[in-house]
Length: 255
Image (tube, rainbow, N blue to C red; front, side):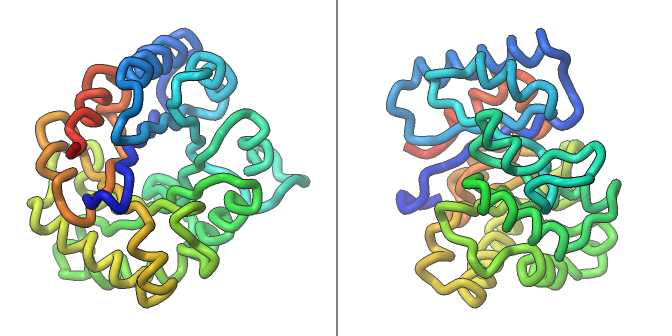
């Protein structure tokens, strides 16, 4: 990372936690943030939709940011079971994850749909955390950069800025497996992502957008990954469900 970009440690709770669990976890992380005072990093938790209101109450005044795991492209309407970005903002969210690999795989989301969700998020004043990354088969076939290039072209709005957009690179084959690319491989992909953003949005904007690593970051590998020039934080899955591990990752951010 660079001092140009403040690290962001984001926790994606996925489909985990009941109300008491969520409140306890959120309170623990909020307490950590309060103890840090003027931290050199930001922290974000993205609980399931039903936990957003109690988590919002639990973290009030702590500086811990609140996000959601998805949103619809429309502001309102006949979309049974969906949640709009306006609703998320109204519930206290500042961020929303869009295009996570599990949404792309389980729900067949396309780059165009992800882009539309990012636009909807920005329209509602939310920061879109746009996820990109290759599968194991794509990696093994040498397609990593091709996939990333296509996803940036299709998923990142032309209106993206450092204020309204964060990108998370998640090698799908590394999520939840404990496997990670080498530090050099991570840096190479992140540098490629920033170069593609520069070509799409301009160098000034690209240099300000935070790039998170989202493939099984944990307390054991966080310091090495967060020290890389183009890694500006992490999108954390399993480790974000343990306040001690999540906090330890944040503590690994370079001063």
